[in-house]
Image 1: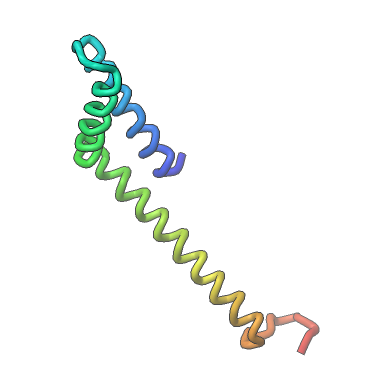
Image 2: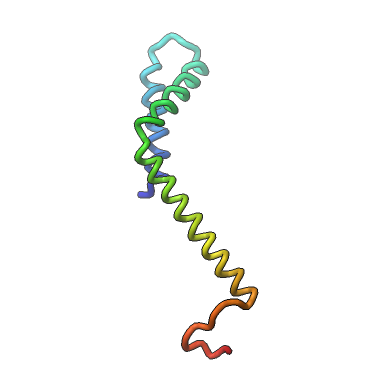
Length: 90
């Protein structure tokens, strides 16, 4: 399972946990949801740091792969690419 999926599911789970903890409190439902959103965001900043860092690394690696592939395609379209061994084209 990718780090992005784990992090997203953990954020949702943390939000739901706070909502359930606030359920018996006598507040408006909208206010409960807003408080749960704020508390779960603050808690996830500290509790889910490892998964957030892993997700950031995965995103950075994917961006680097896309950048390298884009450069390779640009050079191929410009005619700057080197022929592959065994390729019959000059």
